[in-house]
Structure formats: structure tokens, C-alpha cells
Picture 1 (cartoon, one colour):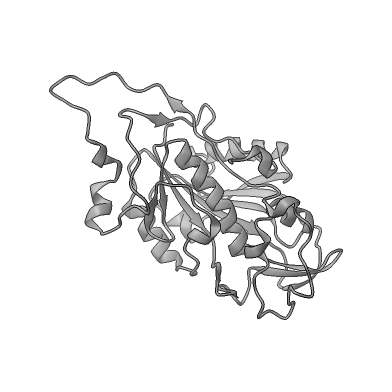
Picture 2 (tube, one colour):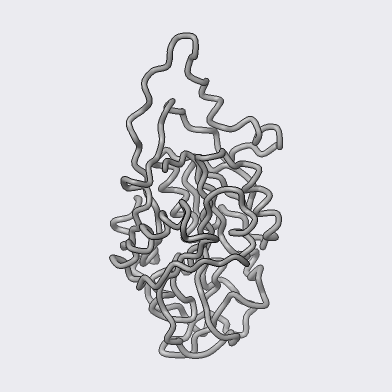
Amino acid sequence: MAFSRIIIDYGHGGMIEGEYQTPTGKQYHFTEPEVFSIYEGVTNRGIASKLMTLLVKSGVEVFDCVEDCYVTEPVTAEDLEQRDISLGARVRNANSENKRGETLFISIHSNAIGKNLKGPSLNAKGADVFVYRNSGIAGQISSKLLAEYASTQLRPRRIIENRSFYVLRKTAMPAMLTENGFFVNIDDTKANAILPSILFANPGSAENVENNPPPPLADATPAAVEVFTAAAVPPAPTPPAAKPNPPVAAAIPTSAIAANKPPRFPPPPVIPGTKYNTSSSFIRLIWASSDSIIR
């Protein structure tokens, strides 16, 4: 199965002027073996921005269903929408840009157990992938993805069918929700760490980071990042003169223009007939230091 458009959802809210936008949960304040705070929505944006950047560099069409726009240039976590947009809006945005048969939906999260927001590192760890049905295309891709976690800092756990997750139940294209480790486990948290200037920017919290510095990260760069890469299938044969290739402007679907959803940046050139194939290296998970990620 080939996909030419990837829709990306990054869960929960981020940071606005030092205030976490999902204040009642989705965070953990470690008391041991080290003392620092983690915010899942911020980590999700760190992962999503790296994923978007590599997909764009690989020539894949990327749609951000949280901010409701196309991404055509490298982005950072700070560039992404920081508000905690409703699930209904995320799904509506995604479905409005579904190119039937060529679109894949990826929702990025990390996991937790218990209801406490503060405490020691917990034992639960590892990565799960959720799908609506494991028998479909999404299940096939999830199997490849889960297998790749074995070569990362995150232990692969399982693929789980879930009929209640809204973004899996309501999206109109193959969809998966990835739980990239447990943010209540210090090892998984460090595997997902992003720039401390974002991750630890919550001066209003009870655990003021001025007194509790974050764990060391080499050169304040990502310790490890989940990304996907794409490999292009050879272009389709040149069509007959009676059926000329579409103009470059077709890179941005007319549905997006009609809905007043311009790309975040000017669209890149289009290579007619280009596809990105899951059977080659499209779903290839990379966990590495920033030295081996994009410069």
C-alpha cells in the first residue's frame, strides 16, 4: 500500500507563556531517582516536529490536523499549535483532507499508569501501537512499526485493538495511535527528551525548575526521537500528450484552498507520479542521538 499524504496528530496541549495547556493531567513530576517535570503534550510536539521535518524532506505531503494546515518546510516543537484542540476538531480537519486510498493518519502520544502527578519513577515501560482493527492496512503497518522499536531505546510491547479511541473510531482513513513509552518511567522519558527550554518551561508549577534542574542532555539536543522516513517508488510513466501532468499548484489540494487552509509555507515542487511505499522503508523507526538525525 502506498501513501502520498500523511496526517499527523500530536496529543494534548503544549506550552503558552510557560503555562501547560492540559493542566489537569498528562504530566508527571519525578521525585526520584532524579527530580524534574515532564509534560506529555510537549514531548508529543517534539516527536511530531521531527516526524514532520523528515517526511517533508523526503517529499511526502504532510497535513497537521491540530493546527489545520499543510506543512511544507522543517518545523520545531515551538512552531506547532500549542492549544489543546478538541478531538472533534482534529478528526474533522483530518477527514476533510483525506485523499482516498493514499492517506495515513498517525496520532502521537506517550503512556502512563495511575492517577498520581508526582512520585518516583514507575516500572511500566515500553511502546504500544493502537489500531481500530488489527486485520486492516493500519494493522499491517503497525506490525512493521512495532518490530522496529526493538532497535530503539523503547521496548516494543504490543499492538492493541481499541474501538473507543475517538481518533481511531472517527477517522476515515487507515489510522494508528502510537504510545511512545511511559512518561512516568524515567528511562522512557529520557528516550523521548526534547529541548529542555521547552520541556521544563513551567515556572508556575509547584516543582519550580529553577530549583530542580533537568537531567543532563548532551548539548541540550534531543537524546532520541521517533521518526518515520519515506522511500519513493520510481515515477509513473509519462502520460500521453492528451493527459498532461498536473501543474505544480496541484501540490496543495483545491479542498484546502476552498476551506481557506493555506500551507504553512510555500509548497515544494511536485514530481508527478511519485508514491511512498510502506513495503520498502516508509515505516522505518529511527532512535538516535542528534548527531545522526537531521542537521
